[in-house]
Length: 408
Image (cartoon, helix red, strand yellow):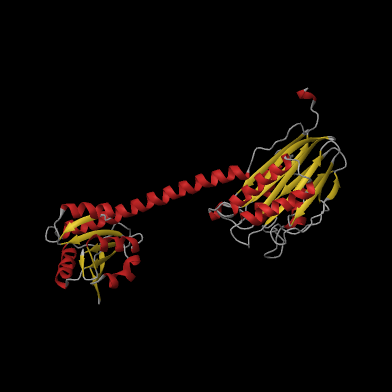
């Protein structure tokens, strides 16, 4: 049996315009009536539900602000009953209201998580009303503190993961500059799996710069650590001198062994650049093609798209040789968050910017210099989208270092 006692009040409670919902768990109808009379006498802004057993109370526990609990129920007694309520009541405050005047039991109840311990017959309407109000406010304060702490922990964890995703490039003696930006999709409050890296390696034909950029599908705590694992594995493979045609298959082995679900895959672009010669070898695994910026134009590099990592392990992804031509060039690598936003004014509803749209943006006469290009490009893409894009964005811009007589 469940009874509703509506204690009407025209005054505002502690929640502006909202009445406080109270569940009284009491098997004695007489005591339940007295509690209702006490609150009515205090003119308290409460709506009170009454349940006579724990079984009857359980479905209502998540719908109330405060639970007034008797410790002598037919199907739950003492601290065991309190523990059951605390487990099922979620964000509700819990006040013990019992006929047992036991100081040790009261201390134990508060230690278990009750907001207060009240003894029947020793409280009047005003003190009972005040106890409920204070209990609800303390619970809300505790809940806010808990949520704040969880948020701080998530931010700290995201910062650690971001440091893993965004390393310090090893540029060595390569005569080039690398500029980057990484913008997580913060509207989801989750870290994605975009990652990149750069490592210069000295060889018989001089220094070569190895570039990596990739994206683990999804946006969450499973994807970000996997992106870190792939980036670290790639750096280790490059520094160990593993042949280039073995790097992507090895990365795929890491992905398959480390992922928590067979549905997780990754797109990757790996590029080996000879800055002095102005050439590069590129391999793609389902990733958007790098874009060459030269002579005021923006042209996607002619590279086979390849298959994403994690779908058919062992499949070959051929390399493409790309020549940059004159010395005045830049190479743009990016993740698909940059091209999946809206195409902008004049486009069909739902149309994505895409690689061609990105090239049109890059062909603008107002295009920023390489150092500022990643940030400028992000702003342009968000302008076309009409606001921040939902996916993470990672951008790399490689530009050969030119001679400046002012620094000689």
